[in-house]
Image (cartoon, rainbow, N blue to C red; front, side, top):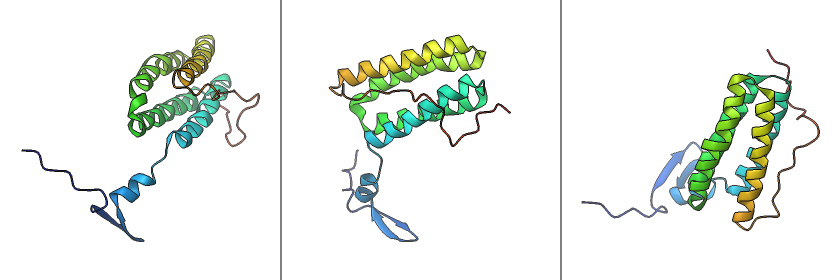
Length: 146
């Protein structure tokens, strides 16, 4: 027999700073705008890491991008199916190019990711959102392969 859910306002967690309700914790979770900002910075770094042939950093950024998208699927379930396909197919192609250290295949898969992102933004009436790859690498990473 299923029990009735306890309202989130009544469930509390204690931190060293005080008690928080589950509802308060939920309100602090990132929304799509914050998650997509993180994703765009990782996707930017991913490109320049691969271009520098720092496949280890590129692989790391790809995995972190996947984690961000999986969080987005939980935060906004209406996008979950499309996010799942994007992770499997688009990021999957990028991952295979990284594994094989194939710059040409990487660049093609990466550009397809941008096109697919645009298509999904169009689908959800967000055509004003377009990723543009900056013409320079992020300044906070040393992209030199180790």
